[in-house]
Picture 1 (cartoon, one colour):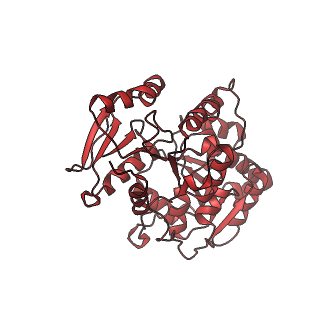
Picture 2 (cartoon, one colour):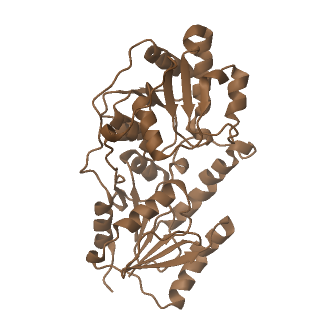
Picture 3 (cartoon, one colour):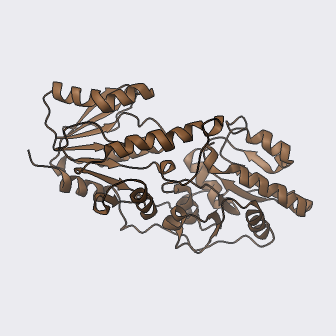
Length: 370
């Protein structure tokens, strides 16, 4: 019996990880899985080897109580004797240390060397993650716990941040679905503009502000060139970062298109049709849009950080730039506008790297025989 704690996997990457994990559970591996999931989780797979337990941990207080007390109380009440406990949400649970735990770690914010200020409203949550959430990660570490991370640079940062031996941290990249761009429709921009895209959520460390500052610089250098640029953001105008207001204040709002959240197939069409992907984020685990755009063969300008090198370091069409220097980003965008649109050989992440098969092999390696 293997117990899986994923009660906080409600949206975004955490939910994707849970759904992928569930879809790869096989009745042929001989394991019986009990999954603790959010109270509103929609079960996507059923079978004799899977049981779901729905738990409401939507508040911090409920999650902490569940991880520290509720989980073990529920397990003991039912008389279950697990051979392994898996957490898909960065931190472990309080339980008998004789039972091994495997924690899927995908929160790079804790590891990035940036100081967040508690008294700045936009930074307060990041401050708490950096200093409070990291305490719960550290508390999860004991001699019988192992971690899985997605890329080598996250492992390096994790080893520097936490007291754990290297052999307890495994690098297993996520399973990346190959995209056949021949089947993706091409968007026809008939406006004579040069189009760039940045698909990212409205979080401060995604660094949208840098791109707006770069546009302001281009406008100061060459107004006619500036008027030919369109930057597409997968955000709504009323996003929490106030980017519409900032664009207006910087005088670049005519160049910014707020697309809102795009359906995946439409996003692929945008990748295929754009002059380049701009990706100035400075905190990522895997950076999936980098791979998606590299698969389309378009130019990419990305932050010169380890995560980006891990994911698309082998792609011919990528340029890595300082994520704090708006001037070099402006120069890169200007150069792309002054040349013909380029298409590079599509890049695919090596198929033999990682994936859920490796994760399930690790499960069978770590579990104890009851």
